[in-house]
Length: 465
Image (cartoon, rainbow, N blue to C red; front, side, top):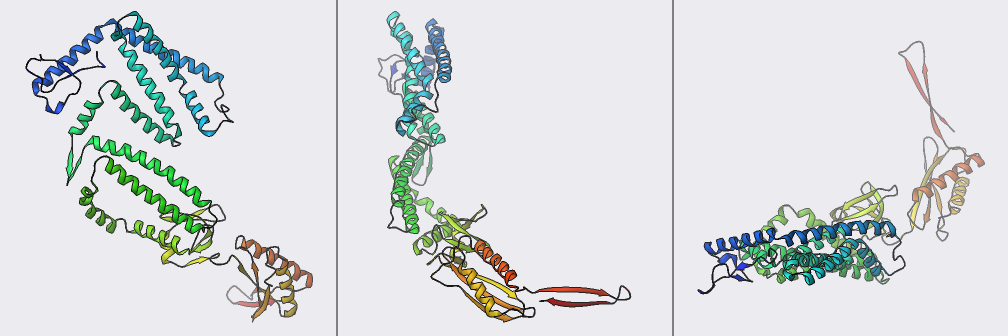
């Protein structure tokens, strides 16, 4: 039969006739005549299978079962509300239920093919229903793989793992896994002391994906535990999480390389190229990475701090390996490289103390009583809702200007958030108090006088008090 396409024996004895079947071929050691005999055997076996009426009977049964399964699935989906299914169940059981509902056509197809296989097994020779056996095994393999991958949340990773595992299972079912592995291992590229083959790359990729997935689960668990600790500062929490994640990733890569038989010393040939690449093209990346570790270690900035870096101001929302995220009050987020925080001037409003000094400057005319002005300003600042009562406001006369007297009012608030709003409220209250007390704010008034014609222009400036 085609699925059990048999292979020629290597090193067959003299009394074995050509075309003898054996289970473990080695295509690379075959001679030309052996390959011709093998191809003839496969061609004759395929022709015999296709010419058999039971081949078309099995193929028809598979198509009918697939059609019935799809029709039954459409009726089932119309009657079952998948959104409310097992809503009160625990999360693992809820995911399992959703996977079973999504796999309903596969389950129905498997049941129908098993029933057809039982009928044909008792009606005729067992070998005449081998295609049904292969179909059942492939369907069961797909169902088991879907159930096992239900614990993975990434949809792309689920598809990749499912398809890869099913291809391997399909090759194993039709007894072609070992020949395919031999074929993939026959092509190689030698780099230094390392022999790279497609089979090695596939194995390394699969093991590396599994190792990184386990690493991600472990690092997320460690991160949740560290973030729950109240004894650690936010910067230390971020530093520990990054160190654990990086350490687990390095261990996962090393284990994956060792699992496929790659000696880490064989990669020494690449160290020079990697060093040159870091020195030429990765300077900024490495600098930002090292700067990020320095920032986490010295605690100069941490998540939640209100900072001003150049023209960017806001609160630090996240600290990444390459940059920090500063959330402004208008919905924007500035992504600032870590290197800039180490090499440039940074204003941290909450480095040691969140208390912030607010300064308001204003002018009055010379007809006003400066002591009364200072008293009004202090009363208004003290009455501000966010002003700290333990630190009384202060107002001083700073200068006798050309247009009036200049004052400076200072008071403390407990948090720099919304400092401009507090300042605006105090200035509005000052304006209302000045109007009530008859205190005027000076402003320049300009008059232009044109005499006789357009050429002579006399300009005078008057100050209104």
